[in-house]
Image 1 (cartoon, rainbow, N blue to C red):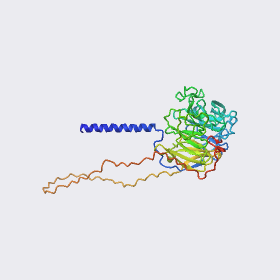
Image 2: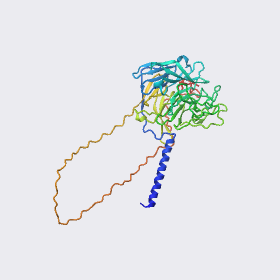
Image 3: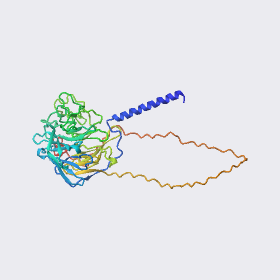
Image 4: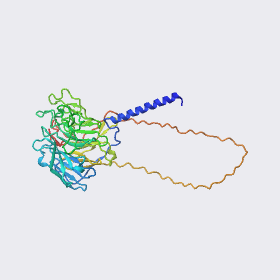
Length: 495
């Protein structure tokens, strides 16, 4: 090859590899899923047990890997075990220390320690009987694996709340092994006399996502040294992110490590906030200066002047028949391939379940999957990534089923087997033929071109398409009364 052509080839190769490396790096740092799910799920609900949880289902949890029991939290202060055979027994009753009078008060969240199989510890979030504070505590199981010790309580946080709403209550372990907790703002809605600014105030834990290390069980918790507000004067070091109203349910994508926070709105918008796995924390999601993407018309006095540099939600929907978002999970189980990559969420008033999924171009698409579900209050995820749903008023525990028939596997056509029987070799006899004949004609048939034809399939538009079909029957609401007589996301919304 001539030297000039060699240099040209090498230069083109270097440019190609550099471009490929840049694309790989960009994909690794993307804050959005890289590909859209292939199909729309067709889901239904299957009742897990005949037992009715009359206390109102507020959370669903699992213990150590390999443990097939489901733990169902009831608002009034009990935790029940659903055994693999469908039997239900009581695990814990702490109703004697819980106030559940307010719609959003009660026993709100449960998570088991990452090393539960060895230490028997688990954590709950409830509202204290006398003060109404958000209480986050650790408990222990007894020698009987189906019974916890109500006298083993060890307090982690008691967070002052100034009203009977917006407590949050969820827990999750992050991919970094730390324990994350969601705490509501304690009703900072901008209606006097409830005006305050908890969510933007870094001196309080209300209206925040918290992040702590519970690996050293000799102490209640320690603060991870890389928490974003460690060493910041006046700030609580346990804070991971802030600017949230009522983050009733949040979750991590078990494949990517990204965090999805479903935050219950006030008058106009329900929203889903997104934090990429590579985040170092410190995000401000804007409440009460913003509701959804909109500037709040009546923020607490002086709290939003100037407006903070806040992250908008990746998705929001209005209150046309809706009132309170119940956040779920991105499905990463193995049983239903069509559900892969879909984030399921619900609205407790509309009784609908939707999927939020990537459009493949950096945006998100909402698709209605199921209607007429009675008061969907919480989702659950087992160790295999399969999903569950709890009904608050119905008291029913459901398993989420996807009904798309599997794609049939093509059957290979039958090709007859040909057995070659070798013919005994013979020694050829050389014959000298002197009669000239015509020269043989050689036909040079060209081979198929080695260059494939590239078919370019256009990517979906990068403009987010938020398809949010309204429910078949839209209830009539009066402005300002959306929170009356509605449980959920944080149990029942009440303004």
